[in-house]
Length: 355
Image (cartoon, rainbow, N blue to C red; front, side):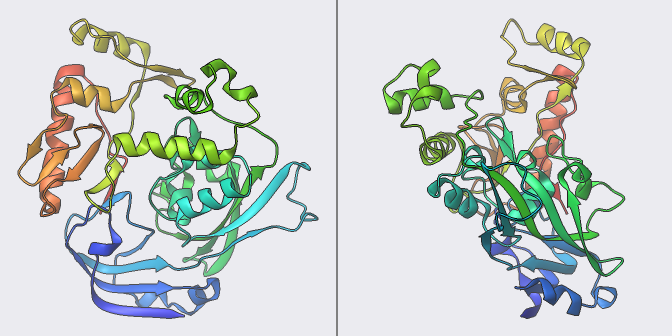
């Protein structure tokens, strides 16, 4: 069923809680509905959103906002040719499913692969576009295929994971050439019945060791280790450092962690006034936590007007009073990027999409 609304209030459709409206709002709850939408006649621009957890409206949206209410989770039959091993579980998830609901479903059924991604806000379709990630895992790691509606050719298509060109918070769907052309309808994800914990990132291993009563280096071998336990631990860590979007408006991590060449990293060390620079070596360079750069510039916990930097995690910009305007968030973002550039010579880029 297609629901079309004029002058729709979008406060409930963006986690920053920006009080903005759009000219036209269309919500649909089946794949077939997309065939019945005449994209050529819709007020432009046309933007498809998920839960609005990774975007900032810069003001009222003069075009059309599309939103999926396609909600299903089912396991593909065992004779499906996409299966590559007996331990694999292939799951089709509708684009409108809250992604954490899928993570919860997977963990409760004892399937490995999605537990590190628990409690990331947003919907599954948008998660596949953004390539969300946390604690050493990305959704691109478990995606097998993404099914879409091509609004240009007016046909249904699908892409294998390698065709999606997943990278750090990037995918083919975000490239300028095809941005907003494909509407994700459902995603096939590959989970595992076989134990495969990923505990190398952050404090997950240490926290699990405390829960299980074993040293951190013995966690992997502990029979009591389950996807549910990893999920609960990840949620506990996230709640300790990130605001609840139901209480404080935000879009989660606002900036990407910069990946820089060695010479830039050495410049950062020189500008750090003796402080140790946290970093991770990747195949594309040295990744420096944006949160550390922002904190070193004195922004952690600061507010400017109604906008602020979260006191527990400076990577998160917040609607501090609930009354922030889009421009206040944008101005704060600009102040922070200027500070980091001036001190460290690094240009921060937003992970959050500004529209």
